[in-house]
Length: 169
Image 1 (tube, one colour):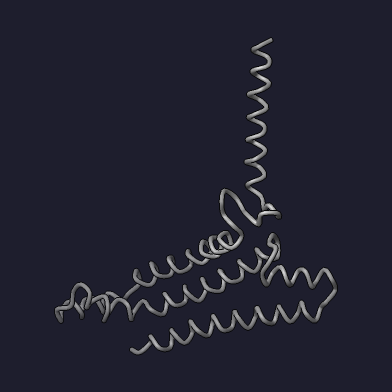
Image 2 (cartoon, one colour; image 1 turned 45 degrees about the horizontal axis):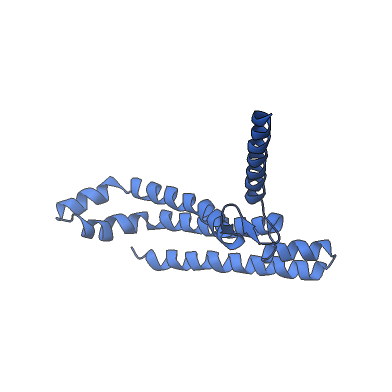
């Protein structure tokens, strides 16, 4: 009888902890928390950063990997090495590809955050679009959509300006 009661008691503790773990993995509307101690804002930043990180890193690797070997030979023959080689040869040659990665990363980051807000958030631009769409306020819904398009255009223009400013050779 004692072993049976101990088993039921331990099983009850296990189920209670398992249920807490399951609840903590989903959004809790009362506390506005996500996961183990992450709030909604931190999770939006984490998802956006993760999705925007890879285009930037991959394009940076690609940009530095495809620098013309002739540029490197000429710079070495003129005595360039180390940081001057990086600053004067490698960075200007790779900058257009790196900034293309930034352009893709910014837009992916921004649109993934807004898309995530439409699916599972209690605040933000995406949530407002869904709220106004469900309440049949199409004018406000399209106003928020146009606002998102304007923000994406500004981010894209910012990277385009950086690309034009850095493309001096």
